[in-house]
Length: 287
Image (cartoon, rainbow, N blue to C red):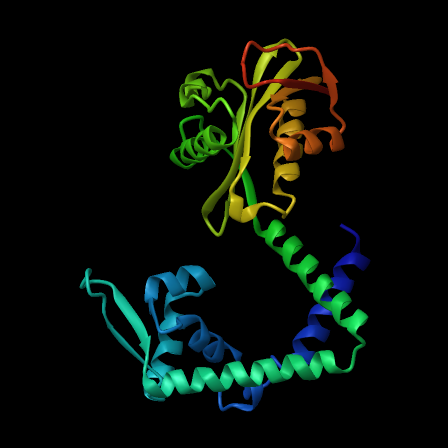
């Protein structure tokens, strides 16, 4: 990766954190830094401590110290989980709800001040740029790794895939047509976001040097990130690394977004090569 590219990202990070006032111990003019202020907002009215830790990616010890600080300020209370005595739940006190209201008001006022120096067109440009940065940062955080054919998370994805196709195809979709683990002689890839499975795909061998990509799927919550294209590129690269020179795939006519992805990724339409009734359009690409 180019050094200039790295330094430009670092420069933007320094500028943005300073511009938003994240370096001060008095975030939004209150008597606490960003960490506990953000935690106060994330708690909502009530949250499980484990859920907060997982959602925010915080170390257990650090989260405990933040919660202890907020407890000492009378803003939260930590109590046993109502259905699991070993777990804990944190909830806002009346003072905590008032403080969160102040945080919301000051945060909105800060955004108004930030946007106020820009024209309406520039405001739209800034918001659009932030949306693009968020999309790409989410995509960058998704991991794509090979897993065993019967991996539980991968099979969960495939069941979700089958259920979605059953709703979208006019003729429905028979889950029994999913490729069984013993027939997945290529590679199964699983995409995860914060440890949660959000996509999958696989390739199998059709003939020497020829493979088929199957069951490419992304979770609806992760669509629009570019994850489908990333999974497809990883599958192609993995197949090529295993001596495959040609990849094929099929899709249903009702999946316009899939057809657009394949055409945009260099696939050309070919005659049917598959007996599957769902492969109404077939494609091929030389790697």
